[in-house]
Image 1 (cartoon, rainbow, N blue to C red):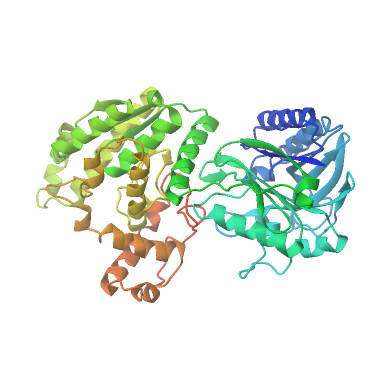
Image 2 (image 1 turned 120 degrees about the vertical axis):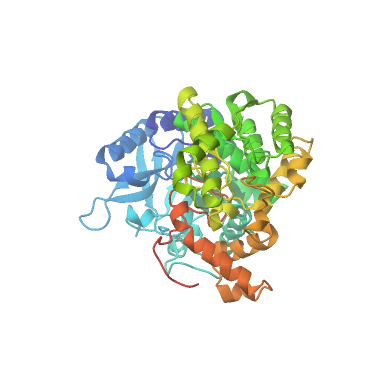
Length: 546
């Protein structure tokens, strides 16, 4: 039996485009003599459709697309993922289903049994867990169809008491097929390989795994679809961060007559870079946007965002605005201009000193008895935001936010100022990782000037200001933040790592007191296991001392 994996990028709710893409691949596979072609989880609707699933007409459109696709499944079979209505009078209204299409109709349905509701997932909000664990016979083979999480309940940390494959194994399948929409984080690819190999070894069956690729707002999908033999060897690994299509001969995988593929080597920072570029590109294309704007300060954060945006959108579609104040250093302006020239992007220099003095004069009678403080610093940040948004409104640019995760964590940013934007590009990237990204971008030639990378970070909102005036050194800060946010370690546990207790307590207080700011942040491209936003749902008004 010839099996094809179609790793594709879908647009949520764009039924015409999704259906056309699926049919095109079915016809291509049929021309190659393929017997079965497999598509990712919820490919019909796009993943995650979220509250669109509560609209009857949305489910009707899913059903119409499935019927249209089934009409092309003659002489070839396909497995597609779609929400389907629950025919029972009890339970949730929908199933997250894998549909086996053959001879112009739905020949078999498997409903996802394990519905994740942790981190970015919320599937139990919409779907009823599947309770039937049958195989489907096709071309002389017994096929076990599973959906994403159904194969992840293995190993030392099991979230569910049910093991779908244990139930399916009672019917002696010949092969496991897993359709998935598995979001990216920079450790996910390795974890995925390990878990799927464990399944292949445990059940002594080959595994065909197809994953979605592309970006759905903050969620990034890396692809990396896999074929694994019954010994747990990875036979094939498909492309990362782009669509891919490959055909395999099942019998040669079952009898081990095919050699395993040399796996792709990926450094975490390279994965992060490619994910962010894809995230920017998909966000703009799927929203119908073309042009981006950002404030370019001469610092490392905005430099990295500009380089990523230029790669994702094309240098002609990115405009940077230099917004120097009386406190901006001459070298920062020169560095920003040099970066723009290196990239070939357009830029404007719009000094804000006159605007700042206008605010100062307006407020002088009210502030005359006070000294320069955070208020005046924030006014500068908010002036810059107003100018960026004016360009955005006038010329149709989408503003890219350039704040990093370290700043977002401790509230080192100004609401309605440098926190503004339609998309946060590096809001899930710690400051120390931003420097690594810069080095990655410069791996073949100097794009980001070295002086930007080497100079001490500063917001330049007052004379002689440096980030370390308000924050610990970023190596220390990021170590605390990573263990607190990603690893959910307590204050005492982090102090035991050898970090000063006063520093840890101060950072914890900053993180906890800044929740209201993050609540108002733009959507953030997720590259870690625990990003701010929908994956980390903390109360704003709380008084729990961790």
